[in-house]
Image (cartoon, rainbow, N blue to C red; front, side, top):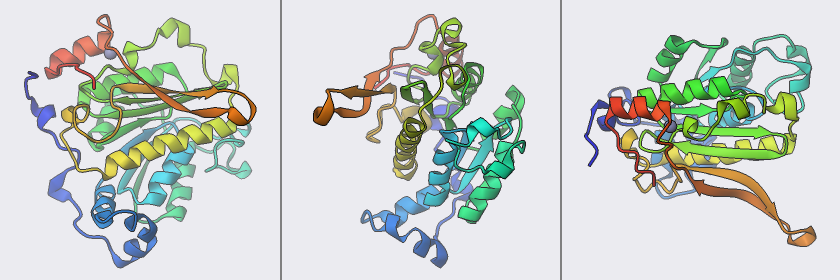
Length: 294
Ligand SMILES: [Zn+2]
């Protein structure tokens, strides 16, 4: 049995400051979502109390942020140190041609506030060091990795494990797309990757399909909304809890068949903890978690 720690007892939201009602304006704005279920108002309220950190405001991050803000998330921290470039515009829907050269995080926050004024948005327009990222992570319940480079992915993965918080990640390059659902009790992102092999594999070197980016982003947003609207459970228990989400798994976008018989979609595979993974060795020892997967 895993030893229960302060992380294992931590709930997904800070109940001390929980918001308990939706305003009339919010009820009207979110009415199509609320009517989806008998407890739709409770689900919407959980979303209003959700605090998410989104790292990477490129082709994946822009639509994920737009969907979360439009749906009524309570707090979103936007992290990206890049400036808008001409080659970003085919995929990155929050930016316009006149934004070239401006910080992505700040432009994104302005556009998202116009889209929905209710969520609390914070822009971190820098490449954060560990201490800056730790501070931002401490104020959030769930972390989302939409970054485009391996060092940043490994940094967020390591600090997510250290904080004991769930990490949702998406990656698209060339014609391939992946999703990862990780929790403190599952394998981590570093368990999977060979840093030497993946160092040069990104959309700058392989190109990227704009439609596949949009598809992957919406799949990621769908998983996030389901998680954020579900009954809260302690972070360390999400992999074992019946959220209906495949924590401890990753998905690859695949196509089968030809012509009219073509089928496509994300196919999920179980992750295995790598016994040689430095990140798991350190954080598992520190948190006393048992990496059982799902
Ligand atoms: Zn690991």
